[in-house]
Length: 120
Length: 285
Image 1 (cartoon, chains in turn brown, yellow):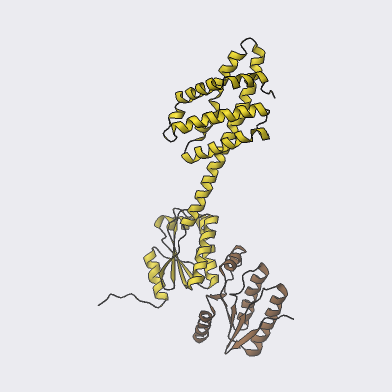
Image 2 (cartoon, rainbow over the protein chains, first blue to last red):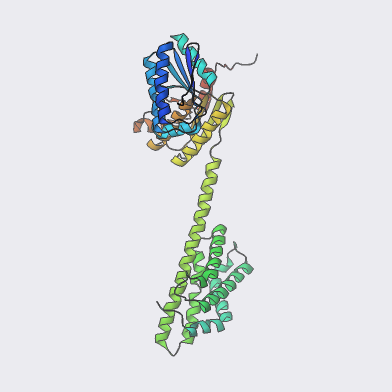
C-alpha cells in the first residue's frame, strides 16, 4: 500500500508530501505520524507541502487535526512551503488553521522549530 | 405587420438621389454632420452607403423582419457604424438619430406618392415607421454593446495597472493598494502578492492602504483573507497607512482586526520589518 515516508531528524520528524493526497493516504499518514511521535518522543513535526498544488476541505482539516494531535503529544507542528493557490483555497474554504505554525521553506521551518524547542 | 408595398420601394428607388439630398440636408440642419469628430466626406459616404444597402435589403426581403438574412449587409453596416461612433465618443442619441432622421424625407416622399390614396398612405407610413424604428433600435443595441466592450476592456486594464508588488528590502515586500477593494481585485492582488512571496522568499509583506478611500465590512473581510493566506504561506503581514478616518470607521463598525499588525504609515511598517529581520538603521559617521 502507498505510504508517505516519515523521516527522523534528531528531535524532529520530517514529512514530505510529494504525491497527490487522497483521503485514505491522509488517514494513514495521520495514524503513522501519531504512532511515530509516541515511539520516538519527537519534539517537533515539519510537514513540507511544497509539491502539493491542490487541496480539498478534507486534507485541510487533516492538517489541522495532525497539528492538534501532535500538540497534545508535546510536539510542535510547522507547515512549510504552501503554494499560493493552496493558501487561497484554504482561506476561501474558511480553514484558517489557527494554532498551526507556518514557514516559507524547510530551512526556515527547522529554524523555527529549534527556536521553539530551545525556548521551552 | 404591414410590409412595404412594391410601389413604395419602387418610388424610393427612383428618388434615391433626392432622398439622399434631403436626408443630408436634414442632418445638416440638426448639426449632426458638422461634428468635428467625424469627417464630412466620411459622413456623406456613410449616408450614401446606408441608403444603398437599405434599398438593396428592401428589394430582396421583408421589411417587417430585419433579423432575416437579406438584411445581413445592413446589420453589418450598422454594427460597424455603432462601433466607430462609440469609439469616437458619440452618445447613443446622436447615433440613433442617424437612422431616425431618415423618416422625414421618406415620409415626404410617401406623401407625394400616395397623394390620391390616403388609406394606402397611412399603411405605408406605419410600415416605414416600424421598419426604421427596428433599425434604430438595432443601432442603439449595437452601440451599447460596443460601449460595454470598451468599459470591460478598461476594467481589465485597470485591474492590471493597480497591483504592483514592490520589494522594499531583502525579504520585505510592499503592496501599495489604490482604489476601492472589491472581491475581484482582492483576488488578483492576493494572487500576485502570494506569488511574489514564493518567488522571493520574503518573510514580511506590508500592505499599504493609504490609497484605499473607504473601509467597510467587506473590504475588511478581504484584507483579513489576504492576511490569513499570507500567514498560511509562512510569512507575516503588516497593514500600514491606516488613516484617522479609516481607524474611526473600523472602530465604529466594530470590526475585529485582532491578530493583524497595523501601522499608521509605511515608514513605521518598514521600521518594524527591519527590526524583525534583525537589522538596524544608523547614521553614517
